[in-house]
Image 1: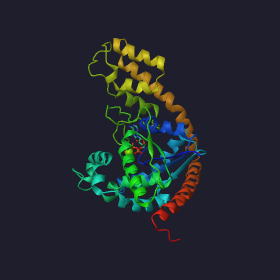
Image 2: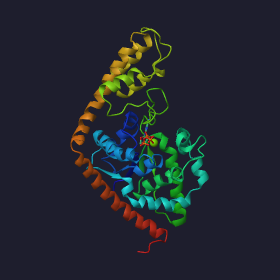
Image 3: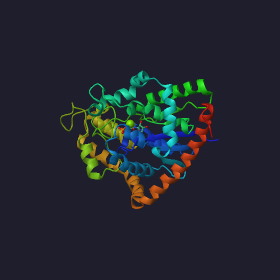
Image 4: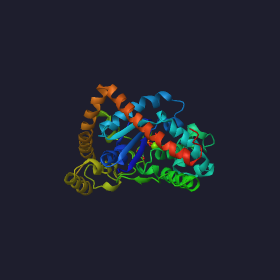
Length: 335
Ligand code: ATP
Ligand code: MG
């Protein structure tokens, strides 16, 4: 029996390098070995985009095409839309009894996201909605309704997984041992930094290289990346460890080339402009085949609809089966 994976993405924008190196490459790596449910989390996206439904709707298809473009194989992975699995919403209601409001307020991911969304939730989070505060509960339902055992994610998700495990333990203590505690699966770039040196490359932070960016956009972004501020002249020696250009070279540049990048930077024989140009070229080498694969889906949007339809039907059936067991355990199985 294959183990089950559940993970998800919010349709709030296109995928960027952070998604690719932080999580997406693991999806592709793990898709042969696991039964894999991959959720387009539209309900979760609405918790902080409830006033912008067009954005969420548009990005469902955008993000699905991005996933197919990086090599997610629809014959191996069940790609589905969260809102079309009403059992998730139902289970969220049941789980909401098993978590305290103060615990949700203390969740580090919720805390940092509320702090980033002052416009929406107020300076000190005083206008936070019930829905946003509760999204970790809904995420626990996402994972467990499919019996998710392994969850490939970036490290910003770890407090949410811990919250999920707490809910599972509480459920099992009260209603019997029927849910599985999920484990995280991290990549070796679990939190890719932004071009500006920010701790996280983010969709909305203006510091991301998107997989769909064209050559010119990528050039402009890389040319503006933060480098060692002590390097003033072209032939000044510099410290690659504090340079965002070297940071990305480490991801996309072949090993022998990378060694030269590092030593030439340190001894001052390489200028930042040449170094950035080489990085731009290597990013394009990585993204070209991804864009090519994406084009096939852009030209055949009905194929994307079909993949989502089939994945959603499969996922819904699994969710119904598991919901039956959950309701029996909770003594609300009247049918
Ligand atoms: P949003 O701001 O809407 O939450 P996001 O960029 O955080 O968008 P998600 O859809 O929430 O993207 O996350 C999808 C997956 O990508 C998650 O597993 C998340 O941990 C991972 N991820 C997102 N950004 C990064 C990053 N900079 N480095 C590593 N992993 C990342
Ligand atoms: Mg996120």
